[in-house]
Image (cartoon, one colour):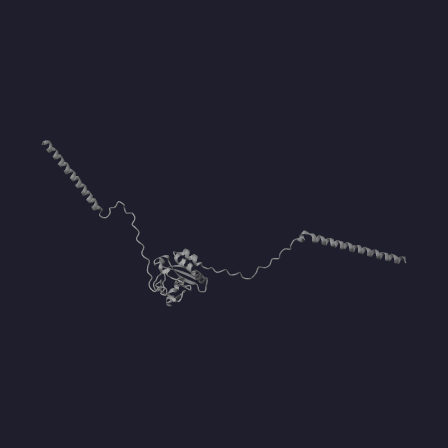
Length: 275
């Protein structure tokens, strides 16, 4: 019986020891976890994972548009034409067409001298709609480089931006290109800009359609000649030489009379002394 009791004691002791060890292990595990959780290294964010570059294509660059107003402002003496375009908002119509790369635009641009050559009433008597039609008459709703004008002239008359009644006739005489309206036939004097989809050509006269002008508009009066400079104020006036001659003759006659009177006075004095 004593042996059984001893064995029971041993079992109880072993059980107690195991419980103590499990308790210590639990405490140790809890401590390790606490240390790990409080560690600054673990508080930092984990490094980001780099992703492979995207294989989608880059967006296409936006198309380059020609600013017609800026180009006309600096390209030459086209301020009158540009002023009319802006006043009537036709510049916006032309700009919208210029941005259409499928069709483009061709504009015949009169110089300032072309407008000043006509009387001011030529344009001031037009209504707002008529002025718009006149400006639209100076453009084709397509891009035409100079190399295509010979073939284009075979299609005469060519419709303008103003519509089918407003047409132009083109002629190409060995590279010299003329643009004919009812009352004017200017030649293209220079290419201001010609890169698809925009072509601007300078002309020396305003294109005048018969739909707006029933007869040839009158020209502006010629300016008065400027006075000649450098003329001497001392130059004799017409007849000045004759006047000078008369003055000289009058002076001689006066001297002659004075001399004769003096001689008579002397003779008279002598006679009185002798008497």
